[in-house]
Length: 339
Ligand code: ADP
Image (tube, rainbow, N blue to C red; front, side):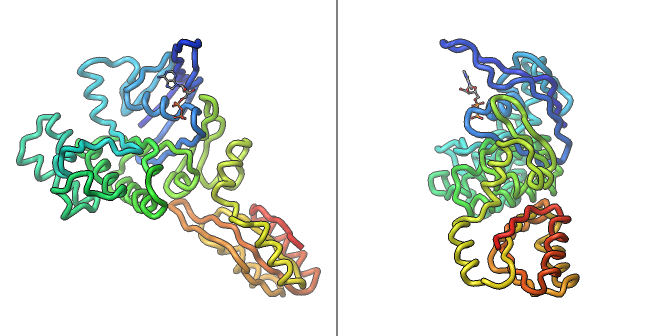
């Protein structure tokens, strides 16, 4: 659905040239939720603007839904852009128009007649869960509701690609989750290709199938989200993964646990897998003659499987505990033995 080859974007500024995007190759499949993560200044916005035809590459090919966006002009570019929609951090709604009118706006521009417009708007309102708010103005809505309007408007013309530019960065964690769930739902129902840029790894973890990590205009690492979580290669990727896998107050937790469980061993394991703590913990209990207690931890079930960090207490014959530790190491989980 999207293919970038050797894409470069250089801006000419008063202080010289700035290379915002530097020789990027990327391909995104139809129906995929693809995340691009990077810190501020990495080149994410420039990249997503090129995917939307808002910015032309200095060199390279930006192919979206079969069209080379760097080459098409005028009517062809407008047609190409009809297949690509975008939602934004600050929603970009029309403040003097109601929910209904905001959603209908792209249909009006496309020349859809009133009757069809109304029908389509009603469908979209239902799809994003805004029934009953059709006649509200954006200022009367919560952040999450505003983003739902943004999503409905973006879907009005049946795009093939939805671009999300830090779409949840202005929302609280709970609202973020509900918007991300809506995006997953839309991805499944409409088989829509979604590309999102973010600086937050939990967003990637929750909904993306694959991820690319950007640093200084380049993609330094990419792969399936689970693989990247399991074995991050680059230092920057490791930092992003740590954002979501490191439990808070680790030091205090460890000290407390060590004092409370002087016998046996306390371990910390960070895992990424197909399902919750299964089968690691279950297998420990089944295979070894030891007591296994989960002392503390957090497991998150996501679109791609589960991940979490657990503090576990193993108690029993020393040799059995050693065998259990060897077994855990084989499971490709990160293991730290505290005592
Ligand atoms: P991100 O979205 O990851 O924060 P950007 O794509 O906004 O990164 O910016 C990447 C680099 O390109 C930055 O150094 C930024 O200052 C520069 N840049 C972005 N847009 C322009 C522009 N229109 N003119 C000059 N420099 C720009």
